[in-house]
Structures are given as structure tokens and as C-alpha cells.
Length: 452
Ligand SMILES: Nc1nc2c(ncn2[C@@H]2O[C@H](COP(=O)(O)OP(=O)(O)OP(=O)(O)O)[C@@H](O)[C@H]2O)c(=O)[nH]1
Ligand SMILES: [Mg+2]
Image: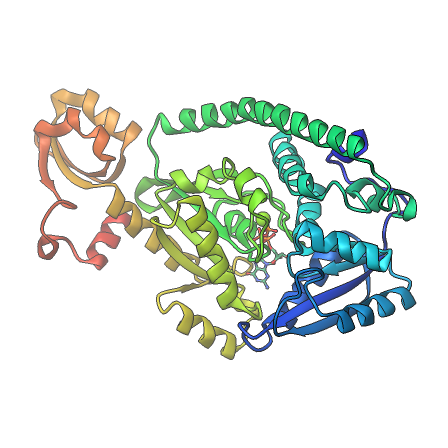
């Protein structure tokens, strides 16, 4: 049991290595969707260094409660998996604990679903204490109703085998449940401590209020590459799913001395286990507290619309769907004209960029500046030289866009958060952002002010 609770994937040479994949096409799915999901599952499984020796896309009119798919097709799959000498059958659809048990009984082979694969990939990537605990929690919550399975996670990773088949007695099961529940409680407690440190760090950052944005999006879209391209950071960017689990924040200095904190976050995927969203909520808090979001999409992905929808629905689940979002289509350097057209239709005001070549980054930065201007009021202040303390303070906390010396005073355009305005109230010449829309400076003049 102890090994099962260990979050570290075991590098046992006997571990499973031959997988048979099963996808399910339902009438609700768009043409090609199930095939594409199955390709994604294949990539996920390969990320676990398990070889794919066969795959089967099943048409499903109505689900069968016991095994999800009908008995004829079930037999056919088991037959094929056995003849290919597979040690695991992987379902793209979520299997209920009972369905999973039934499949394992019928086949004598370990049977897992996409959710478990995703959990395993996350476990493989987790590096920091926070990520390790979060993944362990999600995995334990997933495993609780599945403790009576023929293969626990441990025995599957240890090479499977029939030893555990149906032999677990009630007492053992009760004991296992208690152990898992105890461990869940302990991990939750430990997580509270780890998170306290993150919130201390954030408060430190927020002492000087700087606008923040979070980069969100489907896994492998190029979020870390964008952070690197924008800020010169060196976050690991790799062609593997879920390369990033922990958020990284970097400061970006834009035109007009405007600072912006940019956070890279964990990627999303279709059919993300609910437990993982729950477990990563705190990590994704960076997205919740951001002033706005940059949603990155891989314009070359075969089903960019589904990626778009997945990210929006996870954001909704997190309660971050009311944020202003800049939609960014990345990898234009590798895109076809048809892919660009599809993206245009999906989000007409999307920004096309390449984190690799730098194309489109200027436009993205312009739009970031606009959003900052919208959320941080733009003020014109006239301050006498005798109040140099206030001028110095503005340089420290605000973002001075322009500064003009007049006889015994200085005229400044600044952006400061509303909560910080009070000490300057007597010196306000005009509040640009609060002015009626027609009196507001045009987009172009605001941009040039920012460029000064
Ligand atoms: N052609 C091309 N490839 C890119 C571009 N940006 C990123 N990539 C590639 O896409 C892959 C994923 O990039 P990452 O930056 O790691 O993606 P991510 O969104 O952070 O991925 P996760 O952290 O796994 O969610 C890497 O192989 C990058 O080299 C781009 O502008 N053009
Ligand atoms: Mg990343």
C-alpha cells in the first residue's frame, strides 16, 4: 500500500509497455473529433513511454452500463489486445469504477482510461512540493472508488500480473480506504502550508501594485515559449504535454516605463480530471488574481476550436471567466493559410503571433497596454516642485507615461490603481479614463502617449 501512495512513478523495468487504445465515436461528436482525441490520447500514452501496438475507434449508439460498449465489440477488442500481447487497454472515454472492474475481469489485462493517463503524466512532471502534493491528492481521490480493481496503480506499474485479481477481502479494502483517506487529510494540511508561502510571495509582489496578466491555454500551445519571448525568461518549453505544472512570474517592462507581471500557468486538456482542476485551483489562483488573461492557442492544432472551448470551460470552472481575455494564435510561422482562416472565424479579433520568430508580439504588447490603461485609470497631475515627495512616490508606485517641466511645477501623465489615488487627489488636472467616451483620447494618441 505504501508504494501505491508514493506519487513518484516507478521506473520498474517490468512496467507496462504495450498499450491497446480504444476511442469512442458518438453521434454528438463532430466528424473527425473522436479520431483526433484518440491521436491526443496516443500522445499522452507515449509521453508515459508506453508503446502503442493497436487502436480501435468504436461507433457507439447507446452506452452499455456494464462495459460501456456492446458485448460483440468488447470481445473483439479483448481478442485483439490479447493477440497483440498487450499489457494495458486504454479507453479514451471515462470509465466508471464498475466498468473498469468488469473490463479487467473479462480481459485479464489492466484497463485504464484517459483520466488516469493524464494523472500519470502530471505525476511524472511534478517537481515542486506543491505540484507533487496536488497531483498525489488528485490521484488518491480518483483511486478511492477504484480500490477493488484487479490492478491497483502499484501493480500496474510493477508489471501487472494476476496476483491481485479479485482476491482483496472486505477487511483489506476497508483498511486501504482508511489509509487513503488519512493520507488525503495529511496532504491537504501540508498543502495549506505550502500555499501560505505562495501567498506571502504574491503579497510581496503586490506591495507595489503592478498590473498582472496570466498566460493560459491548452497544453503545448506555446505558453512558456511566449513568456520567454516576452520577458527573456528561460522557462522550460518543450514539445511534450504538461511541461509546465508550476506557475512562473516574470516582470515585463513595456513602453512608457509600464511594468507588467506575466505568469505562465499549467496547460489544459480535454477531459481533464475534475480532481486535477480542484487540486490545481490554488496554482491557478495566479490567473484568478490577474488583471487580464492572455489565452494562447496553437493555430496549427487540428482542432483549435475544441482547444478554445476547453480552456474557456476550465476558466469558468475556476471562476475566472469574467476576466478580459486577449486571444492569441501562436505558431503562425508553421501555419497554413487554411489554419489562419479557421482561427479568424473562431475569434475575429485574435492576435496572430509566433513566439519563435517574434512576429505579432508588438501588436500583443500594444493590446496589453490598452487593457492596462483600461484597468488602471490614466491621470493628468500637476504637482508643484515643493511636493517633490509626491513626484518621487509616483515614480515608485505609478507608471509615469510622460513628465513635462513647467515653471515651478511638473505636469505628469500617470497610471495608478484607484486604491492609490488619494494622496494625489488635490493635484489632479483631469482623469482621462473617467472622462466621457468621446472626450477620451483616441487609441492612437493613447498609444503614442505610452510610447513617449
Ligand atoms: N513553430 C513554432 N513552434 C512553437 C512556437 N511556440 C512554441 N512552439 C513549440 O511548441 C512546443 C510547446 O511549447 P511550450 O512553450 O512548452 O508550450 P506550453 O503551452 O508551455 O506547454 P505546457 O507547459 O506543456 O502546457 C515546443 O516544442 C515549442 O518549441 C512558435 O511560435 N512556432
Ligand atoms: Mg509550459
